[in-house]
Length: 143
Image (cartoon, rainbow, N blue to C red; front, side):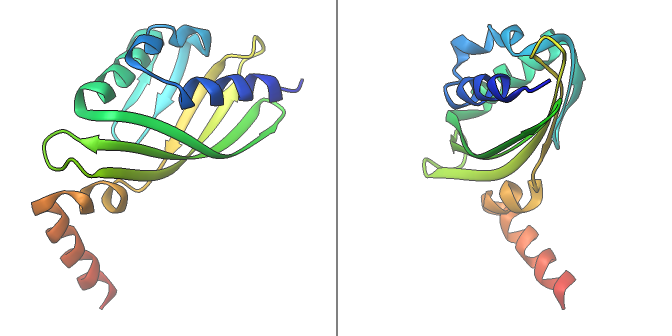
């Protein structure tokens, strides 16, 4: 079964995500869907909804820009840029680059979602105090 149309629906959802649309997350995730990223590992719509609600409390103006998408059978892979402004440390726009492996259920909704991105490089190095420490550690590890 091809999930190309389902993947396009998912891409459109993430590229237009807002606090209001988070409440309709059941349109793209199954009731018992699994979600994992560098900070979360949860199962079920309520937990996944909370992950995305929390995103809106942690950062200003979050948005995803999907740069590539590939679908084969029940599996899909997307690469994306997550663009946002940090609430506490900077009003400068930030960008995290990452990828997601999605597995679709028969009904076309996501049954499994796994994000891959480097929290150290993409996030911690951009924080004022922690960033300096991370860059020193990185240089030390290379020498």
